[in-house]
Image (tube, rainbow over all chains, first blue to last red; front, side):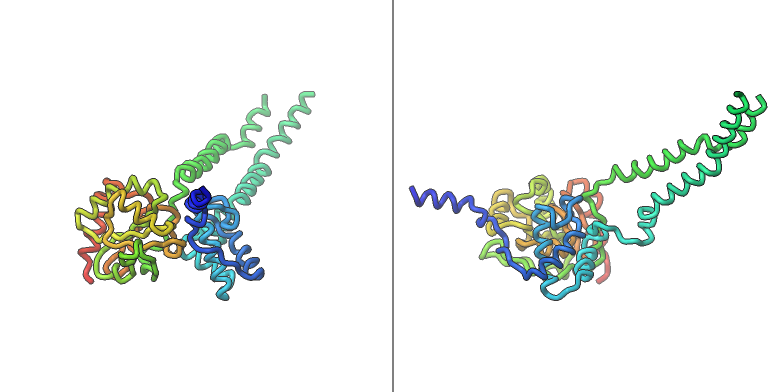
Length: 137
Length: 189
């Protein structure tokens, strides 16, 4: 009976499906890797960073980031490695470049358009109509 | 009465269509943005050389896929996993591709524990000339893979020329992938 329980426990234990044994890194590597990981998008659960995501691919990416940091790579180099393979999409903060200008400055542009419209047309119109209603009184 | 024309002059006629025009522009962005599939990332790997990789064997008796296998012949590298349900859907098409002998078909068994990939292929049939196991996503990340199945079309020099995200359907094979294989076959070495 005991043997059966042990056999059953082994058959379903997570170790049976574990891929690589978890490796521990120094606290310094860990904290730098975490900084990189927080700005990397998990490509499976797209609105989470790889640090937050439980997706298996995210955990493999976390390990890869740690390995590269531990091997002495800079945070920028690790970021570049991932961007090189997955495109700018993996960066949770999109870079400022030609095709992201609208993304970065679009809201400001809309504000300017709205302000110009207000000052050029709506405000004079409003004062005039106020003046008009004053005349009527 | 006299102030009515004055208030009309203050707001030009085109001002009336401005809200509608702005709405249409914003609506246009939404129509474009919301109908795209966010899972399909533009691949950065096209026309790049296949990265070096070291895969493990599917079973102790079978040799693992190596980069050398991809040189000299146009090949398809299919990323699959025993945990991947769309791979079962894609499988009959892969068998048909293997049978057509138009291209070398290789498998990358992604994120599978030892034996799982072999068992899966024993159950559904093995269309691959050679397979390697990528248990910890090293090759998958190097290739920018986001999910399975994904298939890379590799030319004779070992450069990636096309990437298919999601299952290869009979239509995709006939209309996109086979013509590309013919084109790569016709390229001078």
